[in-house]
Length: 418
Length: 83
Image (cartoon, rainbow over all chains, first blue to last red; front, top):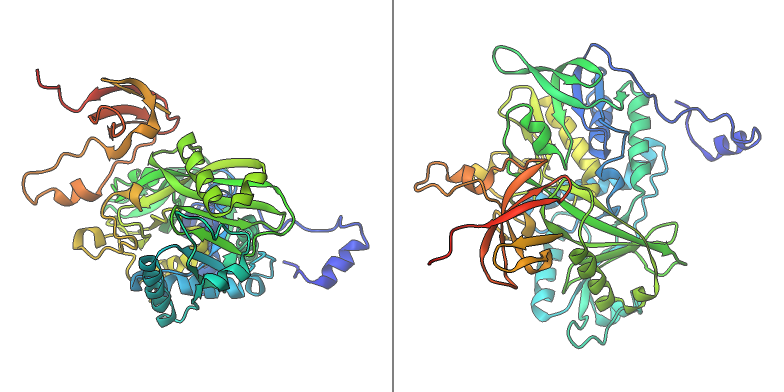
């Protein structure tokens, strides 16, 4: 792998940029691997990379049914943040944020990590108190958080609807280290770095079944490109986790729901960082191309359709107009839907399964993108050592049976309310 | 998405509240309560599911719908109305 640098860009410029090699190797399946990761999205590729780089495992394959990064990695709103409240979550997401901060140097790839800040607005005294508590919880875990009053918010975002009679903006909780990253650059950066360490990235390879021995342990996968042997298998197929796990006879505490997202036409820089509405569900940032990227609630019914319905489009637009009336002047360019693994408590699962040799990474709900780095790190740790990483000990599959739920919103076992 | 309510006819999905898969049945005792509360088949394909017509007749109905296409096959009442 040739190293990217300003000098290599200049050198290639002399040859009309015709000399660039493919970024990563499109591999064909070998007979067997020590570890097979199912799912070539951000999480799967990050897992493959950290298995090779941190744990020195060499025979690794990442299987993808379509093309890498073509699932939820290409359907999110690219926000990175670590503003969680509960102990089981916050240490993990802060670890993810730390990995984001060093990611581009680590991978030698421009993932366009942009720490422009994440600002959560509050609109009542009670919400301010809740945000103060959340900010304190973040700081106790070593993350950064600042509670802003109305004037401080006005300095950052003077265009917000401060005079709303119904939802007056009283202030906000700001995480300056939060921001956005370029989703497909993250996928390709991990793919390139993993490929350089010998990880086989195999596309158009859908898993159709699991091969089991007499004791029930998995020994390989059946795929559309033939049988592939595996010492251990890791699933990183959020959105389709129930479907793939059912091939191994597992029933999971997960429902698949559709989450819509939207992007406007390109505009000059107008939104500094990520801003979220506290009285409804609306979040917005501006991409480097200038489009306003925004979204809100999941549609709320089980779906694998990768597209949603009009009531949520209306609800999201109402949220945008309530907080930021100027957004009504922008024209919508595109909208799309991604399939979110909604777990029963709104938190992810990184754990072994009852099937020997089969490991699960899923249940990311609508928040998987920000977790890409730590998810890969922690899943690789689990696969390589057999023990959960210290920041991911709470993400157990059996927590639903034992009562150790991580219910960040306190909604109970109703996935469409998380 | 428009849902064919047995009482009200075809109405916009916005009038309804979603509950989820209609298949799990609440057990009498503790046995099976974990399965009932937490585990789901989560099918990619036809599913029978509970919807509540909150802004209509306020009746619980069972809708048969394909999760891959959102096509709705039909809807019945959860139980027959009292005569």
